[in-house]
Image (cartoon, rainbow, N blue to C red; front, side, top):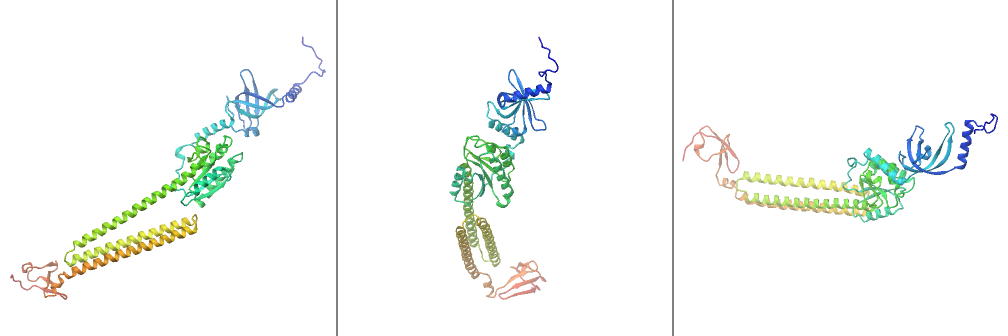
Length: 453
């Protein structure tokens, strides 16, 4: 039976006193406990703390995780998630309920890093950061490369080793960062921000971001949201080259192109340069062949025209003028093309001056000047030879000219104003005006009488 106790007995507690005694007992006997359960009724009020219920099949306990501890998590808690908690038991005296203050929270079944990876992947996918239409095309001729990686890792040694074997001009700017540890993601993001800020000054064509292989924890900076957003915001196309071919990171998904390894990324750059040089060499050969073919056709056409020349002086003069005009146009075209080549060569020399050894640049300039002189000399010789040939042909035709007949006393008569050559007396009438060409000069006359022979 219940025992009646006088009101003044020390065994009688107020509610607050009893709650305080229970709180003291719990906190003294359960300083830290590990509890496994399932999250339910999860909420995040404006304070930034997380309140939830931790339950199993038979029981439940209230739990709270304050903002500082919550900010250390690599994943975001969700309703229905099985977790393992470490915390302190306490009593919330105003309501008289006991709860656990959680300091450590780990997902069960899947690791925290894997849960974080999947959550961030889904978040960025919904934002469209993985969309193919957002990604930029890579440059056809990547001559200026920004390299964001560790200055002491194996990745930079492998990349630079490939670049050193490249026979074409290539500029590499190394932005050294940490690629492992808590500060690595911020380092990488700051380096990419630097690339965006300075890309107009350095004119980088592409950015290589990556590191060598490692565990999921080692590669984790490339799965951070900070790194992913920095890659998406970079003003220069980004190639992600993280780990080995089997490794897939958030950075790989956001980047404009993913290389299976750092070495493969460097080989892609060199391969692009080799392909561009091969195409330029092929087009140069085709241009040279087309030029030679055109000169041959013009030469053949000129020979054919020379063979069709006939006696009349007018056609000879017209053809001579036509040939001179074509020769002049050919000379001007060659001079313009030569000037363009020289301008392109000068432009290329200026671009190479920053990246090419001075001695090699001087050798190339000397070769260019020598080739230019040879080209001018060859063109001059060819034009002189053609002029001599044309003058000889003109001299031969001159010996057969009708003007020699006029010197023997004959004349040519034209009816004015039609300028028609008169061959018979019947072609003119009294009063018609005539122009008469003799060996030395011309006469103007008027018909007074005609007679047939």
